[in-house]
Image (cartoon, rainbow, N blue to C red; front, side, top):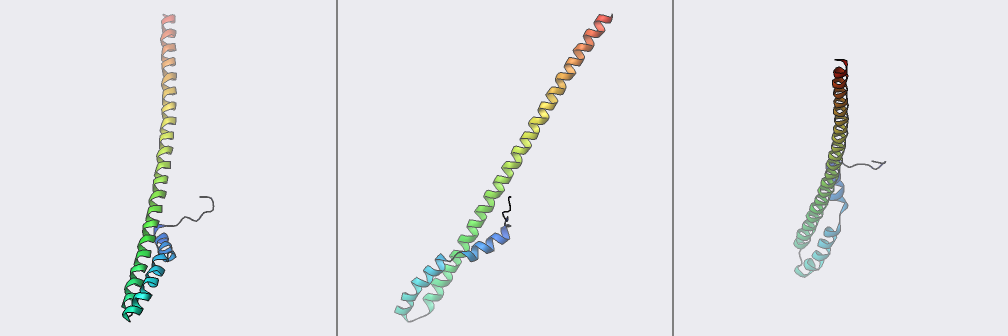
Length: 115
């Protein structure tokens, strides 16, 4: 794969889950005014953890999608390689049967001429 590091599904989920931060920041920004209004840290805990969970879920989903696409490309490449080898084998068999037919017609004409 041209020097490109291929990530396994386990590595990819950790990298994507920890690499996203949009919902965590949005949850914290939403929690700060609500927490000040209620004079409580409860909204910060709720929105902060909810945002973090959304980031993790979105990262894992993205990675699984990429992994499925990569597996589909691999299976497509394998099936096309298999089809190519079958067509080559079919061409070899057809040329072999043509050669056999030519040989048998030559044998029949050769045996008729000798009798």
